[in-house]
Image (cartoon, rainbow, N blue to C red):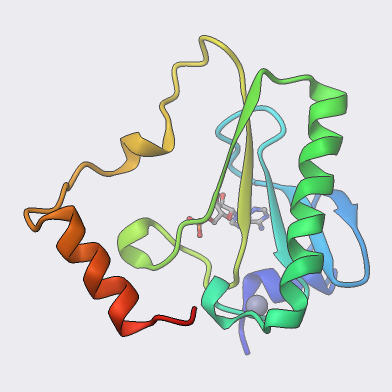
Length: 139
Ligand code: AMP
Ligand code: ZN
């Protein structure tokens, strides 16, 4: 498979590694939106969060936390935006799960996650809720 982040995970393509363990790699985004903008990936290929084996998820999110802690300690930002672009419509360009960790500072001019889309539903909230829980009651 021709996957850029698989190649980075296996060090076939160089990256500026921030943190690495047996299952995950965190490296600096090549096009940073802020100082220390880092992406964290599982080494095993999974296109999106929905494709990750359940047993691998715990270690992956622990790596996200450890990376954020490392950035917090060293760069001392005022906060973080931590998120995933999933699917082309949401801006996913690389089809290998990656969590963006973007350090934030007061006055950096950025917005919150709420600013990425503003398409409120026309359907009532309670109706949408009912649909969601009825179609998948055990998840
Ligand atoms: P996304 O739009 O969520 O799929 O984000 C993909 C991210 O990967 C972008 O922020 C890119 O700047 C970043 N990226 C692409 N190629 C590389 C690379 N070779 N090394 C580090 N980051 C990369
Ligand atoms: Zn991959």
